[in-house]
Amino acid sequence: MNAVVPIIQNDEKVGVGFIVQHVNKQYLITAKHVISGPSVFYLNGNPITLDNPVYISEGTLYQPKNNYFSDCVIFGLRDRTIIAPIVLKPETISSMDDEFELITIDKSLNYLRVDCKPYNNEQNALLFHDQSNWAVYTNAFQLGSLNVQIKCGFSGSPVFEKGNSGCIGLLSSGRPPSEGSKFQTLATFVKSSHILTLPPFRDVR
Image 1 (cartoon, rainbow, N blue to C red):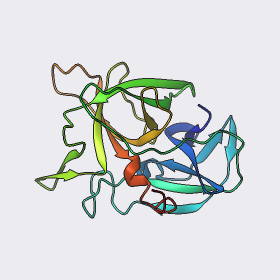
Image 2: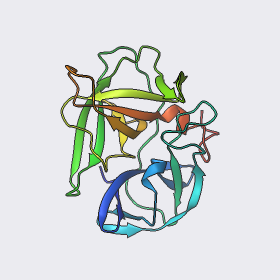
Image 3: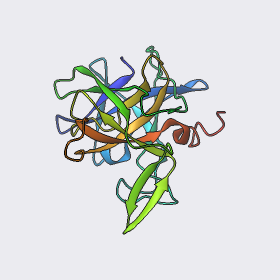
Image 4: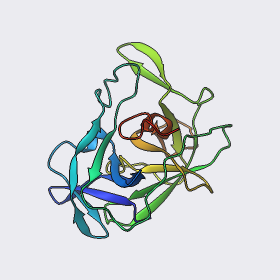
């Protein structure tokens, strides 16, 4: 999927972004914590030029603000690409049997698909530990990866409902599962339904 692009810092892949379109302009979305220094974004092996961010989340991965799990940054693309952009789609998690897939890029810059399922997510929200208090952040959710361990450098990757081309969120973080779990990794995703409320998409319904 060419709209998923690697992010390189100091000649090392540190994350992934993906290209979407709103009105007549294209944007690149990734996790905020990926952009910790000068970065180069590659599309089909060639660097692409980005405008200044149109949105940067206020909080950080471990310090949410305003009751939101904050880890998102959105750039405008200076030059329009000819690739087919990814479409953001509000998620519909109806049961623990729903199937999803994460599309990412490994360190060798090969595309990789990771099978996922909801993890203990009956309220379709993330239960997040924040300064000794448990709080529900309804703009994020957790999935467990079934076939591949989620690794450093996958952050910012898009996640999709199986059999549906719409992107329902971006990967923010991963952590080891509890002992005896069937999952390789537990992963936290920022929902597309939340991203669609941010500039420049907030007028999308």
